[in-house]
Picture 1 (cartoon, one colour):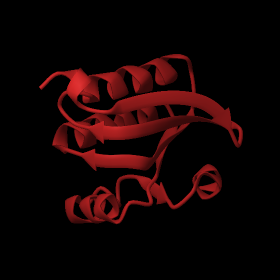
Picture 2: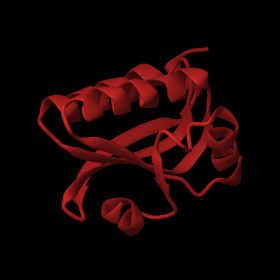
Picture 3: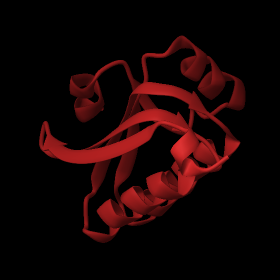
Picture 4: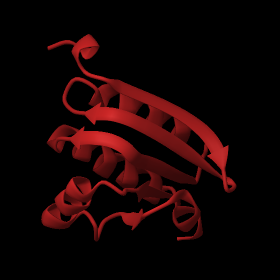
Length: 116
């Protein structure tokens, strides 16, 4: 399977005074490097708060979760935070089952994530 076989898109923007990464499609072993690159770039540019909007993500595997965990550790080490916006029930359940809902600040929308 190549990246062309899986729908994946990442864009970033400033919203609510913080950097928001909008992710769409599937986050898996093929697409995780793209997510990692975007997150690393935002962290390197000095963004202290990054919100990752996963509302349009249909699937995330352990590789994708690993990218998010690595990024939250990296940004918290410099005094920042990485927050997730999640509305998909299966992704909420995955975060709960893995205990990652205790690692991340998870919100149902961008406004709540910005206030966390």
